[in-house]
Amino acid sequence: MTNRFIRTIAAGTLLSLGGSSVGCGYLLHPERRGLQSGSIDGATMVMDCLWLLAGIVPGVVALVVDFSSGGIYAYGSRHALRLGPDGRVALQVPHASRAGRVELRLVTASHEIVARRTALVGPGHAAETVELALGAPPPEPVYFEVATEDGKTARTVDAIEMTR
Image (cartoon, rainbow, N blue to C red; front, side, top):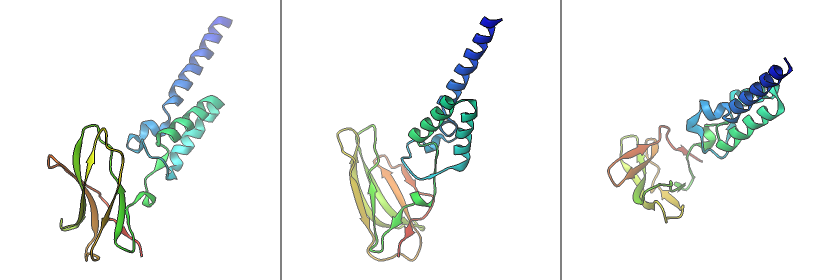
C-alpha cells in the first residue's frame, strides 16, 4: 500500500510539472510567442497563478515559461505603429531565414504608396532600423506594408496612429 501511494504521488507530481511546463499562454496564444514586453493578459496570469495551488514549482514554472516565451503579454495599442509629428516612423527590418530583399512601405487606404524603402534580409545581414517619412499628411489612413521579391505582400490590419 505504501509503494502504491508513493507511485501515485510521483505520477501526479510528474503530470503537474509536465502540464505546467508548457504554460497556459504558451499553448492558448501561440501567436504571441516572441513578444518581449507589453501589457499582461489578466486571464493568462490568473491561469498561471492557479498552478500555484498545485504547488510552488508548477506555478513558478508556468509563470517562467509564459514570461520567457511572451505568451503572457497581450497585444494592444502599446504595440501599435505611431507616426511622429514630423511624419516619420522607424521600423526594425524583420529577420529572415533566406537571403533576400524586402520593400517596406507606407500605403494609404486606397493603396497609394506614400513612402518606401528597400532593405536586405537574411543570414549575414544585421538587423537594421529603417526610417520612413511622409512628405505631407495624407487625407486618409496610412498602413504599413511589406513586399517580398516574389510579389507577396503583407499589410497591417490597423492604421498607423498619428502623434500630434
